[in-house]
Image (cartoon, rainbow, N blue to C red; front, side, top):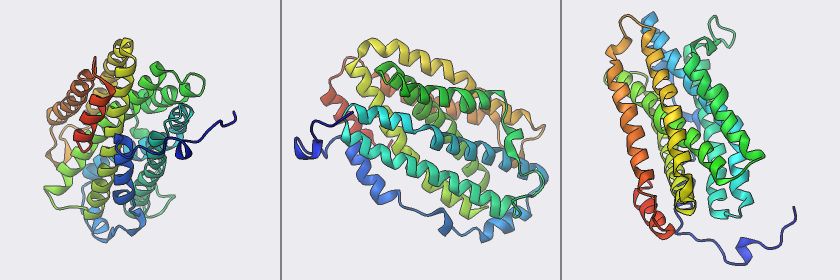
Length: 301
């Protein structure tokens, strides 16, 4: 498909659009190198973990590293769909997503290679055994299906399905609940400072991703109000699998390591889900100018 004009030589860039403001933050805050994080104390702490404590950490690591890889593999169709609509400001910000998801994959794999499995061929290094049915439903099927559907159908309905799956459920419910688990386990015991530092940086990256997802879905609902039922259906369809991932993790243990309590994390996940759902509900019947104003006010939430 040939070009007939270019945004930068016609209307120019709108630097007040929420995606451009997020792009500015990504340029300032998203440039960190997983290879620079010191894991010396993490190796010492790991050696002192019980077998069950190691098992829980490996379970979480297996879900994070595969999830980050899955998004890295599956994200391109969303970028392409936005680009084809000529939304240059949004596409420019979305280019940072792919770099950041790849960087997150790099970080978790580095921790596994240098701390959990010093030898790449170490016994038990295949962590796919931790991926239960609910996890596989989301990351092996729902995520790639929703994002790759955009290749042949980049419609608003398909964009809503993709963003709900990626931004609202994978990042906004599961990843944020996983961060909460890691911080609860490690901060209260002052363990693995390198892992905590990396997750803190990673969480900062993904807070921007979620902010964009809320913006994208709000914009789509403002432009296509008839798609609200589709959005609501996607959210409610995926929620049981997301909560199921949490339940599956806790079901592995008679006594959960680090004193974690299942209800705390179910409640946390539901709170994150409800918070984003309420934000999206407010986009119904609202103008694009109002969507932009609210997104600017909430871009860090």
